[in-house]
Length: 447
Image 1: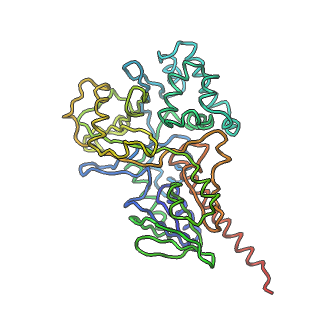
Image 2: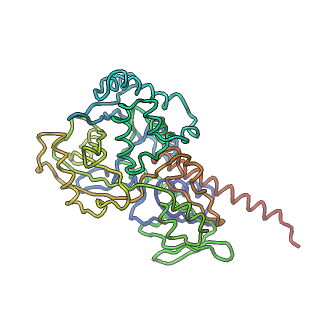
Image 3: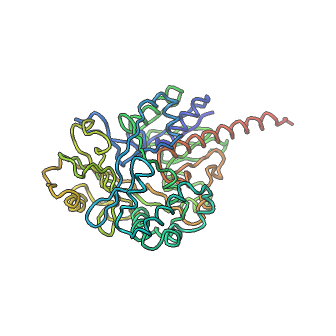
């Protein structure tokens, strides 16, 4: 059995590893010069560790990625810490979590944007989402905005939930279902996890484990077209040539699948094209000095700031790993045709830099050592009401072609843990289909 996997993110890498371990001949094609997808990193010459293009961490409950790390001998390089997450309000950052549930609850109660009764109501509502229910299918039948206004109260919605939804989903904020909000709080833990050497080190280790199991991995090799051949196999074409495979797993964004697989039935393609999503723009700024007072993550209101979040990575991971640089992410989710996607680094930094003075009055442009800009037009799927019924099936209508994207991790939000889970799910599905086909062929009696 020969299988082509398109995409070297964590879904594609995990599927390649699992399939190769089961004796499948796997060839993975990745268009970028590195593996890791949206969790991949970059490294300045004077750094010991790379840092992610788009900020990443895992939660203590992310059992899939932690189990995989253990399996490939990388588990001891996972560590957890308690960085501080805050909400910007009235000119300062207010911590909203802590090292334990009690500390987090007290910080919520201290948050002055809402009167005390509203803060209590808000805390109880979030506690219900995190601890009180697992029935996400019922939750997806209403919008998060509708539920938050009714259950958490108008003030809590305006001060906490509405900025979150509008910042994350822009024009689709009012459409997002409650299951997304449930999953966001359900998955969170007070401690956040990271890998020695960053997520790139783990992606590289997983790719190496897949190679040891027998997989072949080609980077710098985007697939331009796939086509089902008359005998049932699949032709996969790249700039360097073409080859035939028995199965194809497309672990790619929906727009890429539509482009490279035009032979899919129009109804299925329309289903894929109907998926809504936002892109991500993230700027990484290397500073000579820390910007915030030991804050890791600061949620921002886009009615007040030109970005959604400020993440000071080196208040979580020591700056010694980055040559003493203090690394700050300035991140945002935007519709794919937003003008910022056309801005170069200098132009967008000019937009963002004015905000830096608000976090530290001593900030000066001469603090800046370097600036990098990263863009992804597909980064955040939008889950409307009843979304589970509208996700395209992983098994496409064309036999032997499978499609796995971030939309398929629903009801969970995008993240490396669920990408790993999806990769294992699809690998299991492909192996099961293969065994079923072999058994069927063995039972056919020739005329």
